[in-house]
Amino acid sequence: MTTRRSIITCIIIVLLAAGALVGVNRFGKISRVTGPVGTILAQNIIKKRVESPRDAYKIWKEAGYRGRTVVFVVDRWESFDPGELIPAQMFRAYPLQLHNTAKLLEHEHLDGVTFLYVASVNDVIRKIVAILPESEVNRLGALARKTKDFRVSDKGVYVTRQGFPRWYTTGANFSNGAEPVLLYVGASYFRNTEPEELYRQLSASGQMTDCIILCNETGKEGVTEKEITRLNRFATLIGVVPSSADSKQMRTSETPLQSAGPAV
Image 1 (tube, one colour):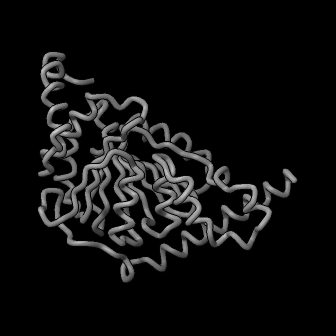
Image 2 (cartoon, rainbow, N blue to C red):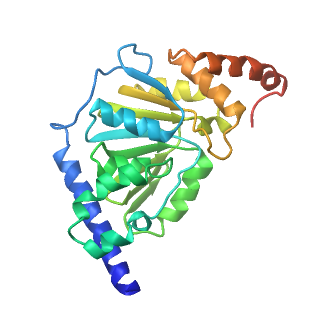
Image 3 (cartoon, rainbow, N blue to C red):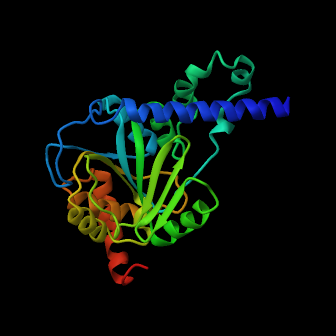
């Protein structure tokens, strides 16, 4: 049974990957769904502050986005094995329940690690450009060299995994893409980066977007008041007014941060 289940797991993952690749073609330039587009300072685009990545996924889905590229700004890329999310009853019913996999992942396994994969199998996104600290890009580059579908350059790391492409790069190496993107900025990114630096890099790139999600990443290990305060500052830079709770937190956190000297 273990061997049979392993074989079925591989088949399901391959079929999901194939389906995602078909989605890339289906939701290409012609079928791509976007909203009003502008720079990160534009007032006509969606700008939302959320607590968790689950909220970001819900906003994307409710807006009707399809076939999109997401620029994902966090401190660390977290991976997982999609095969571990397939329940035993689905193996027994294979292939009858395969078409329900995307819905099952959304309803039962949507969290801060899986939400981009859930968005891909539900046709919301088709490509990821992850802006990460240089140390994290280097770590992923070392891992990528152990796979067959990778490309490493001085600009970053390219890998095709789980059916859709991913670019891992730094803020300094990020460049404007050919299409408007969904921009996601997590508080964790500001652990070792000042918000003004990210703002300068994104502004200099000229990247266009129709939706910016700023996520507090509540409950994520390592996210403290310092990171939230810096996310508040980034929000102000792009014209997002912090909530009253965020503003209070910013005021109570600014003094110790300033007296502590430059962040490391």
